Image 1 (cartoon, rainbow, N blue to C red):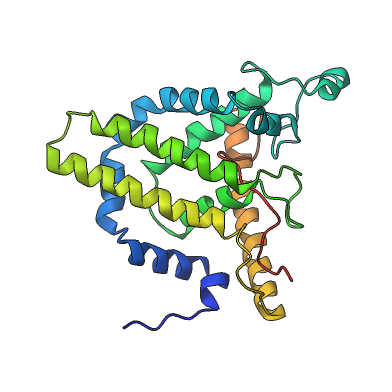
Image 2 (image 1 turned 45 degrees about the horizontal axis):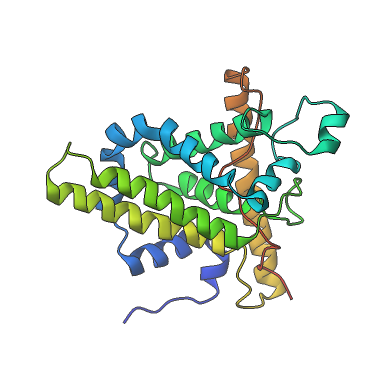
Amino acid sequence: MQTIDHDRLYTDLQYRFDYVSQFIGFSKRDQELIQLSGTVVGGLVPTIVDAVYDKLSNYDITWNHFAQEQEGLQLKQDEASKQANQVTMGSEVITFRKTMLTKYLKKLVTAEWNLSYLKYLDWVGHIHTTTPLKKSTINVEYIHINALFGYVAAVVVGTLQKCDEWDEEVRDDIVNAYNKFFWVQNDLFARYYVKDRVLSEKEIRAVEAEERAKEDVIRKQLRSESLINSAVGFAAGTILGAIGFRYLGSK
């Protein structure tokens, strides 16, 4: 029986990831299999992204979130358009969000699994929540995030199951690796929603310090990408969204 430090699960990102990954069996081999799938998934990213935003556009409750202020994006529309809150598939904000989702999926099959990438995955779960540590006011409720995760997982897994590039055993292992990954990523969303405990003042300060440092690093990385790709015109952002007042430090 392993001894797990309860408080570290809420204050130490690497420790939390290690615990959840070990519990569900998300191993180094699974990470390698996801990278192996990049030869297929990489080419399907545009199709997956379009499918996700077609799904989001089917419901006003999800589509309306794109009319809110977007972290890392300065819209070039006039004031009248802002007031109208009219978002179409061709709107700048949708192009921006599609770009962010594209980067997320490509990074998934190419990134090295280290603390830097783990902080990025955690930032994805945090960036669209309403907290004192971020500027944007987007607040997507967890019910929509969870539903979207289920849809994205179904699209990716369904595509991989039809792939004949690998033998049946390898294909099944890749599908299983993605299934585990989505649960890991979902936990890094849920940590900002679930109010299952009250942190001490010391724990709150530790979490806030970690989050500020994490966001500083990622914002610098995204600003650097923005300078390289001036046509896109953004410095920070993410995909998939997230929500709710973060439970860490809530009373």
